[in-house]
Every structure is written in C-alpha cells, then in structure tokens.
Length: 181
Ligand code: HQG
Image 1: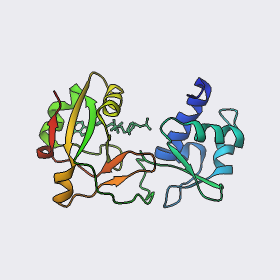
Image 2 (image 1 turned 60 degrees about the vertical axis):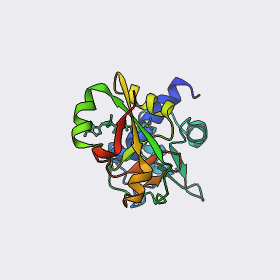
Image 3 (image 1 turned 135 degrees about the vertical axis):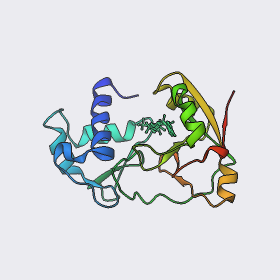
Image 4 (image 1 turned 180 degrees about the vertical axis):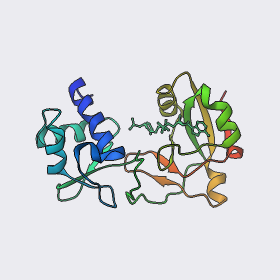
C-alpha cells in the first residue's frame, strides 16, 4: 500500500499516461511511452516528485499499472487508455469464464447492447469474481456478469492480456453475458 500522497500522484500519472498527456504538455508515442524526465518535470509543477519517488510509486502500485522501458528512460500505463495507443498487448487465449463488475444502474443497457468500451479502448474483464466486484463497486451497487470467453474465442473474438493481468476485448455481445446471481 502506498501512502495517500503517493496515491494522489499515481492518480495524476494515470490521467497523464492513459487519458490526457496534454495536461502537462507532453505526448505519448504510438506505443504509449512517455519520456520519464518530461513526465517528472510536468508533475513537479503540481506535486513534489523525483525519480526515486516515481520508482516507488511504480514499484509499489498494487495493480502494477505502469511499466518502464528496459533502459528506464520511458514509462507507460499497462492498460486503461482512452487515447489511441498500441501498448503491444499479446493476443492470448482466455480462460472459459471471465468476469465483469459494473453498477446495477448500467445493467439494463448492458443486457440490451452488450459490454461496450465506452471512453476506453477496450472492455476490461477480470480473471475472478472478487476483482470484478471491486471494479463494480467503483461505480455503485455492484452487479457481476460472467463472460463466456471460451465461446467468444471459438467464435473468433480476440482477447488481450495486459502486463498487469487485466483481460481486454473490444466488445462483449449480450449473448455471451450471464448475470451472476
Ligand atoms: C459500463 C480500473 C451501459 C461498464 C478497473 C463500466 C478496471 C456500459 C463503465 C479499469 C455498457 C465504464 C476499467 C453499456 C459497458 N451500457 N454501461 N452497453 N458497456 N458499460 O471505468 O471496466 O484502478 O471505463 O460496465 O480495475 O469499470 O483505473 O471501465 O461500468 O481494470 O487502474 O461502462 O479501471 O482500473 O467504466 O474499469 P470504466 P471499468 P484502475
């Protein structure tokens, strides 16, 4: 667990590396990488930070949200982007069942339209029920869907596994969803 201050900085880093690099005037490259020194300079206008603190945030992040390039000069978010980047996710055969946690107020729309990526590049799926429940609670009273990932795979849908264990796919049509009671 990181301290609250580091959590606040981590949320700002997520905003920059997933959604709005322009808030500190930087760009991500096509693979989602940002220059570490440019990131540190940009964040330091708002929060005290240096390379050691960044290393601590990245190393201790409970979801392993970020990765450094091998030479340590670049950093990117492992998943969760709304900006169009290609973080070179491997296409991976999914387990038979994956889980999606959401809020009850979205259920009617999801059962009619299936799961859509909304503002992000992909629908995010969890490997287990507990994780899905946590994700769902972020939005309200949770509801969990079982995703028939095995059948989707056999029907030709692609799944990707992020560096931090989140399963991603473009959409989940409603017939592959079952509400978990
Ligand atoms: C819902 C966190 C109505 C969807 C988590 C979700 C995750 C629909 C919301 C990551 C819908 C989008 C992503 C439809 C989908 N009608 N609502 N047809 N299809 N939705 O935050 O999956 O902590 O973009 O159910 O751990 O909640 O940020 O996606 O409730 O991995 O690292 O639209 O964010 O990670 O919400 O969460 P989000 P998510 P971090």
